[in-house]
Image (tube, rainbow, N blue to C red; front, side):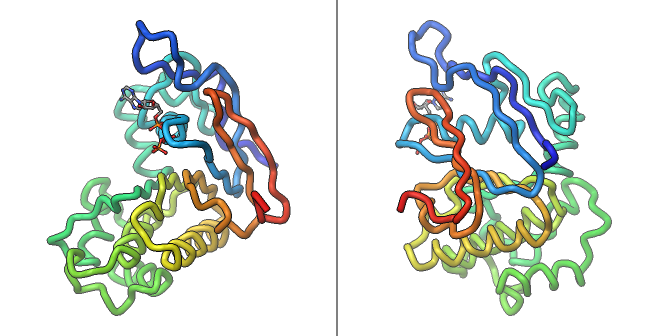
Length: 232
Ligand SMILES: Nc1ncnc2c1ncn2[C@@H]1O[C@H](COP(=O)(O)OP(=O)(O)OP(=O)(O)O)[C@@H](O)[C@H]1O
């Protein structure tokens, strides 16, 4: 197994004067081509951990290494470049531009990050893979929640990221659609040989081999799930 990311003695305390610490100091290693499921009660620090690993929120102490580089010690511009080129993000609220079409939303990374390899053909292929091939010219506000999340996943994967971070990607979806979206996420990430870090309350939907990162009282417990069926 090849290490992709390492968090060393990371901790998070949002309010310096408070006694409580959202994440207590600990180290964590993420390997290439694996699926990590961040679990825990509401408020336990799941999004906090995902944001620290994703280069979005600096830990109070400690370092996050990506491919051997200390992410938060890099100049801001370099941190952004790594986030844009190597990481993909999917959120509960989709974060799409509703008045834009599906195609225009998927193409956004091309304009923000000057991706020349995003072409009409690559967008069509991606949309087909996501099951939204017939919706390319529809405005996003006309789509269902499940369709919107497919667009968000397409937009996150069009840059071919090495890690996809997904924070409650099914939080706004019904249980049947959640199942389909979780399956789409794990299948597409696996076929691209990428790594997935996903925060979810629906860990029972993850039916492939993965590693649970369960947060309780600020500590992260790491458990491999070989059969893919956790909590049963
Ligand atoms: N920017 C912030 N400033 C102060 N406290 C914060 C901030 N962000 C999160 N917190 C607190 O840190 C704790 C962990 O929050 P976090 O959002 O990581 O939890 P979570 O497990 O993702 O919760 P949920 O499942 O409800 O989304 C919570 O008590 C939250 O109130």
